[in-house]
Image (cartoon, rainbow, N blue to C red; front, side, top):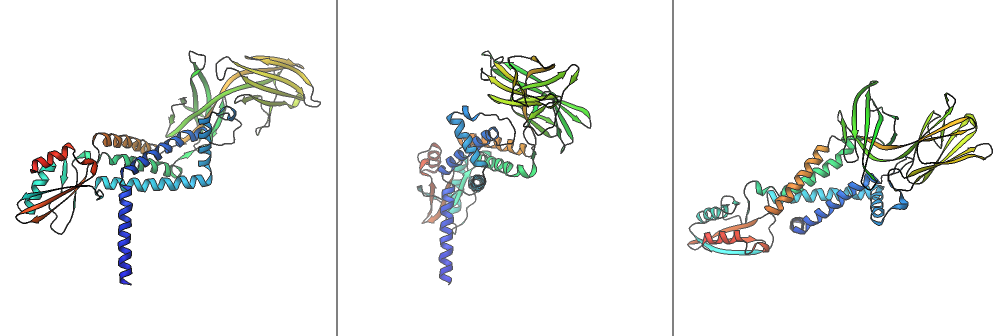
Length: 442
């Protein structure tokens, strides 16, 4: 039984050492970098294709290119149960590997097979070791006191801050993974809500209401939309608390609550008047009840239906955007249908703000835009930003101060001391090594 336990312990030590060498290999760093690229890619495309229950969408599947289709498929798979579990498992594995690599860079590098440099120094092992320490210090390498005859190898690492800079890369990965993992527990986000001009959206959880007050379009030279800026009014306790400016690439903050404009699209405002009286309109289908003003939101070529129950009429509105997002290249085909017999009472094509008169009713149409709004509390955002900063610092550390470690041993041989430097093969012939050997007379 004792021999079995001893063999099991030896096997465990060999296996742990093999895993440690694999984790510390340069190829593992490339694998981590590749994973992090995929991690960032998925994080960037996932908000664009998140499935939700809105009657609008940011992307039209019929117009997707190959790259967009691949991105949508990847992100949709990652939002499924199996994909999410696999994603979490891989993230946990990457986190453990990053922690081990950071530990190896900062404290104990792996003892791997490499090039041995043997030389003899005069004096006792303690004197030879002190001389070796001074020589290594001239090239920025640190070496501890002489460990004694019983210790076979001692590590030599960079001195000062440069020793820790490459490890910041893995610390940044850990911070980013931690921010992503803890955000569902510490943070909160609302559903994606479409908001048209004048509409109010209540965030009961936060005790505030939001109203879209203004939309400003800034065209490009080719007629397309260059910039889309909206103004959001925040009400708290029935009083105006603040006005916020929203853009697609910027968030707006109010008392720790972040507001994101995820997208925008065309909309049409519809009203029906009988003299000075506004009639109620009902969108079909629609969860909301009848109201005097209806905002119809479109994505690409779509049609909407609006009922006027008091007059036995139904409006069929088909939206066209011939300019693919360019200003002034949109139109609306309107059919007024009698709901009792399906007869088309009147039909017209509208390209700008206009009105129609049918059976004594005045139908008013106005083109406008809507935005897709989301509110978030992100207490761990600073942790993610710090992780990204450390990631960049670590990359710079790898470029300008790459990890440099070697193992040293010294033992008495006759009247002197035999010293051995064990270093990676890629370090053979390096200028710093030649400098050390020349100082030692090797």
